[in-house]
Amino acid sequence: MDKYLSELINSGGSLTLEDVFMRIVFSMIMGLVVYISYRMTHMGSVYSKKFNITLYSLTVLTATVMTVIGNNIALSLGMVGALSIIRFRTSIKDSRDTIYIFWTIIIGICSGVGDFLVGTIGSAAVFIVLLIFGNVKNNERVLLIIRADRSKDNEIRSVVFHYFEKAPQLKVHDTTELKSEFIYELTKEMIEKANKNEINKAIKENRENKEITDYLYEVGNIDYVNIVMQNDEIV
Picture (cartoon, rainbow, N blue to C red):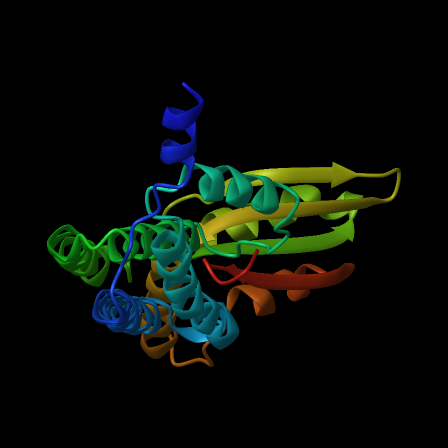
C-alpha cells in the first residue's frame, strides 16, 4: 500500500524539452489570438490595454502551471493550496471580460496538457462568436432631467408631451415643498425624430429652430435642464 501511494504521488510526467517548448509556444500563439480578439471587440474607453496584456500573460502562466503539475497529485494539491490564499480584486467593467478570463484559463489548460487540437478548435469557435456578437451594445438611453419650481409641474409635462411624438417614460418625480425634479427616459431615436420634426416646423413657420431645452426654459423658474447619455461604457 505504501509503495503504491509513493508511486502515485511521484508519478509526474517526464516531459522532454521539446514537449515543454511546444506547449509554451502554443499558449503564446493562442494568447495572441485572445489579445487580438479583445482589442477588436472592446472599443472606446471600455478598452484596457493593461487588462489585455494580463489576459495574454495569464494564458502562458496557466499553461506553465499545467505543464509542471502534469499527473503529479502532490503538486496539484500544493498548487490548489497556494492559489487559495490569493485574492483577486480586479473590477470587471464589462461582462465580456469574464468570458476572456475563462478563455485564457482554458487555453492554458489545453496547452499544458498538450491537447492542441481542442484548444485550437475551441478558440476558433469563440473568436468567431465574439467577432460577430462582441461589438453588440445595449441601446443608448438618454435621461432628461428637469428641476424647477413646483408650480410649473403641469407646464413642464405639457412641453415634454408635445415636443416628442411618442410620450417619454417618466422614471422619477421628486418633489419638495417648493421644488420638483423630473427624470424622463428617452431613446436616441426619439430625440433625433423630435429634432427633425422641429426643424421641419421651423422651416414652414419661417422661424428659428428650437430644442427641448429652449421650450423648457421659456416656461420660467427652471433651475436646470440636463440631458445625460448612458451607454455600456458608463458604469
